[in-house]
Image (cartoon, rainbow, N blue to C red; front, side):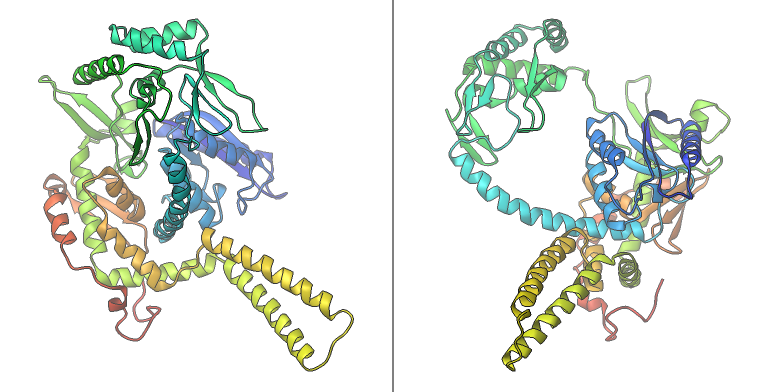
Length: 520
């Protein structure tokens, strides 16, 4: 597993030495947990209250290159002190398959904060979907005209002034060559090596006025996408819109179909480029004996069957720990089942929603401050209008009113933007977000991961039981070896999915809208 270290100090009270100390502790954490550190990112004299940190932003951008799986920080306040920035950037990292871990904190993050992040991410996704719907309308109009919708231009084409794909006469012959050589039986690696030796790559167009176009060498993924891209036979496609002959064809259909048949044959053969299996408890599962992280492993038996399991990093690396490995599916299912039992508890969800509501009020000071400023300006405008109606008009009245109205417009826009980025949710909205966890599709990896990331903080695995620390106060769950061995989430989850969904208002029955009866 590869990782990078992010270190930061913000004030005169912290010196350059503090960076060295952070890196030293992070390196010790990586070494103990058998993690390879491939790079470091350092911001000096910059606060985590803002995301305007050059190397922090570079790290987020580099996460998309998939060269590291983890970001190790000394403590989590090195990453961000703002809950909303933390949720936003962790969500961006999650899409790139990267997680954030702390070297010095015994828990992955402060209690209810992670659950609040999950709820906020859900509402951010709502705003994102709403915006996407508006964007998609414009993109659909473009698609009906066979216009380029901002996607990567395939090798062999260029985009003209009218945003239509046209054949690039210089690169199109190389596309034909790749199709023909693959159809004749050449391996992708041979084709890639040959093109690299000849200096032929894919032209990546730079952003207008910012960066120049540059050549990227061909790789397996580029060739694979190229050989299955139906644009090369003239087919334009955008979602459910398909237009035959909507693009100038480079490859004839007979050659294209011949290539598809060979791809199918290769897929049935033993996979050369097999993706790593997804281990849902990575960075959350720890050895109960030595405290080291337990990492995903796989092995093949004599009869050729592949097994997946978690193994203690110290048992694997130094053999100083004798903790036995645990089957991946068994421990993951046992953890999911334990969390499902918790989230189906209506009383617990009500109590938790109150705690999250309080936490949000403590951390989100931006929206309330802007609302207060806007209210003050609107009151001043109302006072001036009242004075004008009473006949009290001075030389400065008009200019003062115009200035206040302009300030009102600016604050209204700032408030709208802040409410989108840092929404201040009611307790009922938070409760609604929590109950949506019950509707996750646990037949999918995404659903399982969302449930685990939202509620599981850490798991310590001992020989005869596991102790799960949840993301809320006193949220611990003990599961025995028997629970792990007999774990099966399918039947239990189906029963829970069929349970009638309870309305949020049903959980507030005492006339106490903020849950002041019983609290965690």
